[in-house]
Image (cartoon, rainbow, N blue to C red; front, side, top):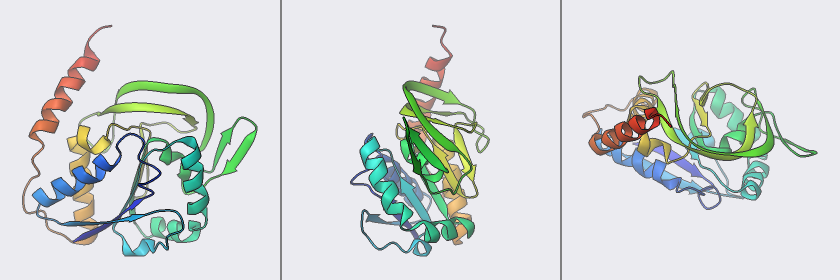
Length: 218
C-alpha cells in the first residue's frame, strides 16, 4: 500500500487537477499496487513522514497565497521530508511555492526555499506545450496558463524526488511514460512489487495524436 496526501484539493484544483491522482491510482492498481489518498487542507495537522507521495495542483493566485501561508507553517517538516527522499509532484502554479520567493509587482513574498529559483509575475502565458523531458524517452505534452516566470530552465524541475512543472492538462493523464516513471520510483521507494504493466493504450493514442498536431506547420 502506497500512502499519498493530496494537498489543498479544495483550493488548488483549478484545471481538474484531481485527474492526476485518479490516473495515478488507476495505473498503480493495474500494476498490482493499492494507493491510499488523504485530502489535507488549511489548518490540518500534516505529518509528512507518514506519506510516500505528496501532490498539489494549480489554483488562483489568491488560493496559491493561502496555500503558501499554510505551508510556511510546515516548512521545517516539509524540508525534512524532501531531504529524506520523500516524493512530491506539483503541477501548474503550485510549483512556485517551492522556490525562494514570488514577486508580484512591488510585493515580494517569501516562498518555501526548497528549490533554487525565484518567480516574477508578468504577462500571462497561455499555450500548448511539447517539451523535452530528461526522465523519459517521450517529450512532455500539456497546457500552460500562468503569469509567473521561473528563473530556471526546463519544463519540469527535478529537485531530489520533488517534481515541479507548470504543465497542467492533467499531466499524468496525457503523459503515460511519465506516469510509469513515477510508478517505478514509488515502487522502488516503498518496496512494493509491480506485478503487471499498466495499460496506457488510450492515453498513448491521445498522446500520439497531440504530438503529431504539434509538428504540423502553422
